[in-house]
Amino acid sequence: MTERPAVSVIVPCHQAQSTIVEAVSGVLAQTVGDWELVLVSDDGSSYADFLVERGISDPRIREHPVRSVAAGHTMARDRGLEIVRGAVVADLDADDVWRPERLQRLLPLALQHGAAQDVLECFDADGVLGLSGATDGTVTLLAPADVVAFDVPFHLLVRRELIRERWTRFPLYTPDPIRTAVLAARNPVAWLRLPLLRYRVSGGSMTQSIAGDRQVDAAYAEILSVLGDGDGYGLAPALRRELIAGFRRKRTLNRAHMRAAERDPRTPPFIAWVLKRGGAG
Image 1 (cartoon, one colour):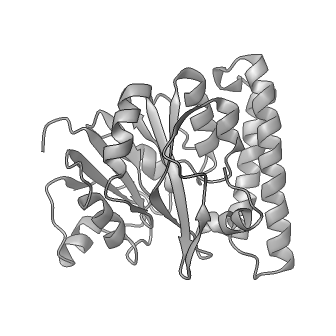
Image 2: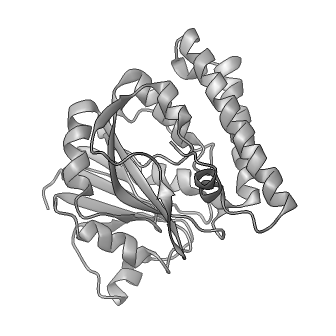
């Protein structure tokens, strides 16, 4: 591996033993091999040792613990940023799977524009639930308001020098839309309409639970406060007003799902629920 690989892949890991082999195997299968993979353990486990025990050993794989337990996905991701060496940084959840050509397709877009995102193929134990967008292979440059219109997480490839802020006060995925909106206000975010990431939807996940909905609601409240009365993340007033409208919509949708799940425990996790309603991106 070169001293500075093309891509650094950060994988936060918390109780991920049942899925981490598949996630890492998806990176190993990439048609672009110039990468490093940083496993960030958030539960005290050594996932590098776990992979070796299952026959996966590669010098491009490193481990970097959070040094605490259950610090949260965002803290783990920011911890990984401390040691990455790649020109581009990619996020990978420990239960998701990349298609073999994902880096080949997205890396040139990230290098050209600054950041790149693809369409998510959402699935659960029963099969594919749906897609987060069209799949015609076209590329669109997303404005900040476009970013907030998405109701699925972002899994960006971003040029390392463009990552300025840390978002550790948010434990879950909630910083994804605001950090991506802030990024899009400064630099293009290219959206490639191809399904290159398989996004696992699990009712047992904290991010797909009622407790997760409550934490997301609290995070949206903080985002709206910063946009309305705080420093607005350094964004222009007109853009702040536009994003406030978008985040109010997102908060209303999240609360609707929370109420539905409280009434009926059979309510699907948020992403599956949104796709069933015909939304997502």
